[in-house]
Length: 319
Image 1 (cartoon, rainbow, N blue to C red):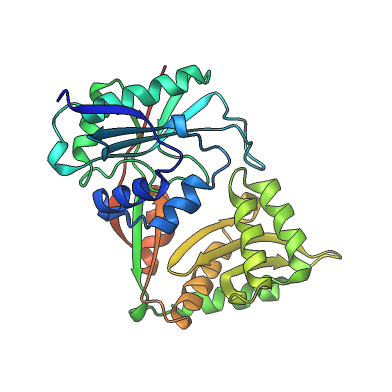
Image 2 (cartoon, rainbow, N blue to C red):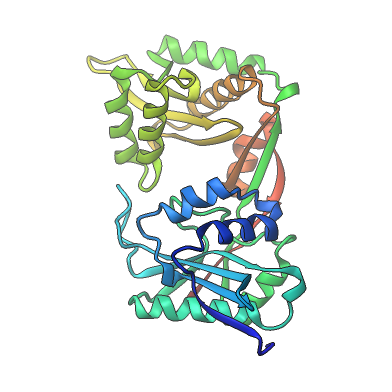
């Protein structure tokens, strides 16, 4: 490694410089300065010591961002013994000098000092940027991590759907009529559905689902499109019961989920097309999501016109 390169934690006044470095060095991830500030600098778990920086005469030339859980994630299992690496970037002209290796090892030391026993790359909720390195774009990073003892866990895929040519099959409209005949209606989130939707999310899906429901409710009440979150409600009994929901934020599709006990009734497909149509009506040309598995893609998304756009690899290492 070149002796002129120094590594250390991020300085308290370097937030904007680091954000601009990330945007410039990782153009495929479209991480704007505002997005970096929102997902990193404002994260209650962020610590300057976890942002390991490489500098050449004071100029930022590399970054490895390590995140560990200090503030628990609502409705999620405790993961305080796990650390995450969410960003790894080295300026192109400084690559192949051992900088990335040094930064990753420094990030691992940060996690060891925090008492964490495992490092994952990079499914840190809610502040991850991608599920893991892109196998094509970040092939060098994958090879480096493997050389440092990281193993591949699985290969999530990102998909896109061109909304400008979206059509809803006749069977979807028939499925919605069949659901309505059985008392299941697809409704936009309103005040009366906020608590049932949060209760459904907390009961059926651990992790980030409650946060998505809360944020969507906040946005809708502040004037955002009511179709941002659509809910499947079983109204056949004395008390309406939420059995699924589908969400979008601008072009980003998801999450979408149905109570496992109600799967096979085509509720998920009806919710999906309702959200895609809402995105289409809002003028978006493309719907996309970052994370699915091949089985779900085959079962649900391929038939709606989604196609694989990127392939990631989730990796982990025991410390």
